[in-house]
Image 1 (cartoon, rainbow, N blue to C red):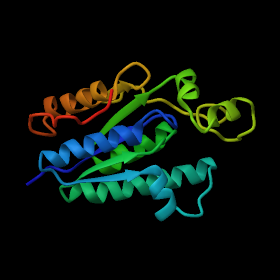
Image 2 (cartoon, rainbow, N blue to C red; image 1 turned 120 degrees about the vertical axis):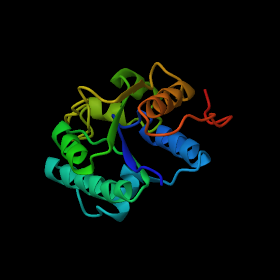
Image 3 (cartoon, rainbow, N blue to C red; image 1 turned 90 degrees about the vertical axis):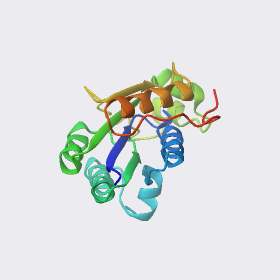
Length: 186
C-alpha cells in the first residue's frame, strides 16, 4: 500500500509553486502513485469562498487546505499543496496535524518576481497601489528549515524538480525511479 504524505509548497506569488506542483504530480502519477493537488487559488474558489485576505482569513484558508491534505495523506494519497501560506505558525500547525509533512520552499527574489510578473502586480504593490500584498505590504515568513529548498530565480524547472524527487527518494518517501522524459521546460 502506498504511504501517504503531504508535500507543502510555500513561497511568494509567482515563485513557481503551482508549476512545480504540477510537474511533481505528473512524475509521481507516472510512477503509479495516487496524487491530489490542492492549489491555493482553486481552494479559495471552492472551499474558502468568501474569505478575504486578513491574517485571520488567510490562516483559516491554510488550515482548511491542511485539513484536506491530512485526510488525503492518511488515506494513502500524496497530497500536494501549492499556496503562499505566508505565516510560519500556521505551516507549523499543519505540519503537526498532518504528520507526514514535507515543506518545499520555492524561493525567489522580489526583483525576479517583479521582472517575470506579466500582470504587473508586484510593480503596483511596490508603488502602494495594491494593499496587503504578501511579501511587499504584507508579511511573508520564509521557512527556517524546509526539507526542500529550491530557488526558481536561479534554477531551471527541471533542476528544481530533480531536487524535489531526489529528496523524496533519499528520504524514503518514494521508490527510486526513472524520471519521465520531457517533464519540464528550461
